[in-house]
Each structure stands twice: as C-alpha cells, then as structure tokens.
Image 1 (tube, rainbow, N blue to C red):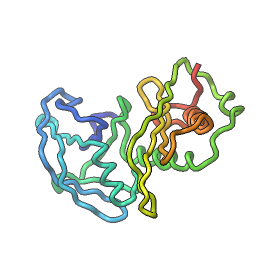
Image 2 (tube, rainbow, N blue to C red; image 1 turned 60 degrees about the vertical axis):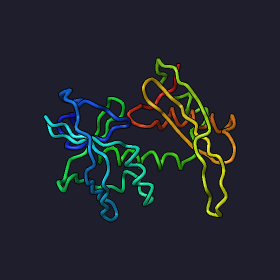
Image 3 (cartoon, rainbow, N blue to C red; image 1 turned 120 degrees about the horizontal axis):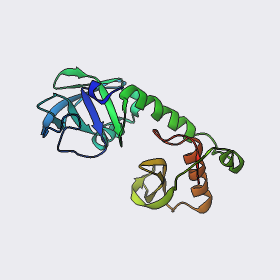
Image 4 (cartoon, one colour; image 1 turned 180 degrees about the horizontal axis):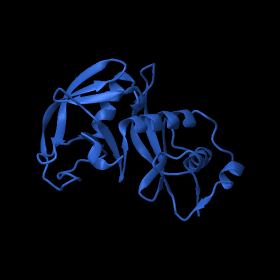
Length: 201
C-alpha cells in the first residue's frame, strides 16, 4: 500500500515536515480514539500536514496507551482523530505498512517468541545474506514483579542494516552467552518485519 493512502501515519520518531509533500507540520493536542477490546479516548500531541491533511503520531506514545490496558497491536482494530475515522499505517524505517498488517506481524512475532529458538543446525540451514549484524545489550529500565519487588531490566538487540531484527528484555541479570545465541538464531529464523529470514555472512 502506498504511503499516500493513509490518513494517519504512526512514526518511531518525531518529524517536523510531511514526508509526502515536505510541508511543515502543525503540532497540537488532538483527541485520539483507539478501538481495541473497548474504545478509549486520549488527548495527545499529534502532527497534521496543512497541505495534504494527513495526521502523524508517535509509536512510543501509542505503545504507552497499549501498555495501560495490556493490549498489543493485534488488539487494535482502528483509530479516529478529532472525531473522524482514519485509515492508519506504520512507518518501519522506510517500509510503510497498513496497521492491520502491523498487528498481524506483531502477533506472529509474539507466537514465534513463545516457541523454542531454532537449533544451530536450523540456523546454519538458512540462506546467507550479505550483511553484518550487531548484538548489543544494556540496562534499560526498572521492572516490578507481581510481589512488588523491583529489578533492573536489560534489553538485548540484534541489529541488521537499518532494522532491529530481534529484541528481548529480562529482569535481574544481563543476558548470558546462551541467551544471546538464542536471540541471534531468532533474528535469523523469525526476524522482526520488515527483515526477512536469513543468516549474516
């Protein structure tokens, strides 16, 4: 689906100009209706192009809304901004997809992450791609468990050219070599969209 077909584009980072026609965006608070298992309204900062009329929102803000209710992208069926229903898309660092597709991919990633990681033999059987991946981990946030205890959370990322192929977060201790190996194998067999399966050269 082309970029121009969306009334609302969710972005990973703030922008100042419309990616469609390079017009400076008007940024202001607007009512956002999120259709999930139940409807919720938020007043949040949105950007609108005065030329083409398209709205732009920030994915991190939407993730916070989803976290409030324990939703993920597959739970959300639609949006309205300023009392008007809008078609929505997600910009994934240059690859723009419809919101419904993003929800389907999110659900598929969740299901894949619940499965055992691919074996080393399965990983080696993947087609080789001409790219180098980086693997990094760092302290990320404080995580509270059901008992109220708080541990430092660590995030690990396998990053290929222009896209994070796989991510995970754990509380209490950094990732060890076995856990990082599993994350790398997942990055090869079931990477985050828009990456495709493969192993690095």
